[in-house]
Length: 438
Image (cartoon, rainbow, N blue to C red; front, side, top):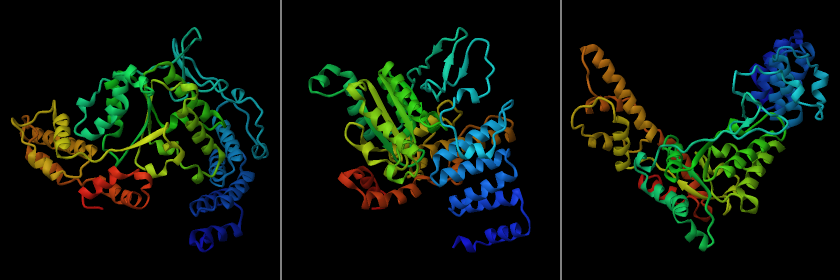
C-alpha cells in the first residue's frame, strides 16, 4: 500500500513538525510517483498557497491535474507557469488559476517576439497553426509563406534488403501513380494509408523517405511536437492544417513517426483532449469529399497493438506492414552502403560479418560500422599512418554489440499469438517462426 511507503511516511512526519513549501512539493512528487494524482494535486495547491508565484509548483500542479484527468485545471496551471516565466507579464494568483477564464484572449497573454530582418517564425494562435510544427513563415512584408518540403533524394535503391516490404509499397503506392487512369478505371483512388511496424532501428523512417523519393512526392515528416499543443483545440487545428498543406501540394507523403502516440486507443485515454486528437485524425484520414486523392499517409510504430482499432479500418490505415530485421542479403547491402566512402582494405570480404550479425537491425549495423571506424582512427593515430577498416576491426567492434531486436520480438510474440484478429500479424508470426520464437 502507498500509505505504508517509507518515504511518504517520513515526509508526513516532517510536515507534522512544521509547514514547508519544499516538503509539500516533495510530498506531491512522491504521491505522483505512487500513482495518486488527486492527493498530489491537493499537496501542490497547498504549497502554492505558501508560494503563489513559484513556477516549479505551478508546473507540478499542472502535471498532477493532468494525471488526475482535470484537463481544464491542468491547462490553467500551465498558463500560469508560462506567465511567471515570461518577462514583463503580471503575476498570476492561485485563485485565478483554479477558475480559468476560457473566454479571454490568449494572444494578449503572450509577450511579443523580436522580428528577424527579413523572415521570422511566428505562432498564429487565433487562426490555427501552420503545417510545419505549428509555425508560419512570415516575410518582411507580413505575407504568410507556407512551408513546402521538397521530395527526398533517397530511393529504394538506397534501402538494403526488405524486398517483400518494397513490393508491398510498390503495389499500394507506386503502381497507382504510374498507372493513374487504369486504377481510376477500376475505381481505385490514388492515395491511401499504411502503417509500418517492427523493431526499433529497422529502417521504417528511412523506408518512408525512400518511398517519397520513388514517387517524386513532397515528404512531410510529422512528429508528436508538430501536433500536440497546450491550448484546447489547437492540436486538432494543427493536424487539420498538416493535411490541408498536403492536399494543396499533392502528390505528397505525410509520414507520422511513432503514430501510436497520436492514435492511441481512445479507451485508454483519460482526458477528452487526447480522444479529440484521435477523432480529428480519423476525420482527416477519411478525406471527406474525396479530397485525399494524391495524398499518401504513412505511419511508423513499434507498438501497433496500441493503435485505436478505428484507425485500422479500410480506407484509413487499412494495412499493417511488418518491417523485420534485415536478412543476410539485406545486411550485406546495408554494410556496403555504410562502408561506402570510408577507407577499407582491398576486396573486403563481408560474409563472416553478415553471418555473425543475424538478428541485427539496420541501426545495430550502422553502430558497428561507426565503432569500427573509431577503432581504425585510433589505430591510424598510433601507427602514424592510415589504417583502413578491415574484417578484424569489424569483428572487434561486433564483440561489443548485441542485437537490439530480440527483446522487441519477444514482447510482440504475445500479441501475434493471442491477439491476431483477422490475420493482422500474420507477417510477424511467419518471421517469429523463422527465428524460433513461435
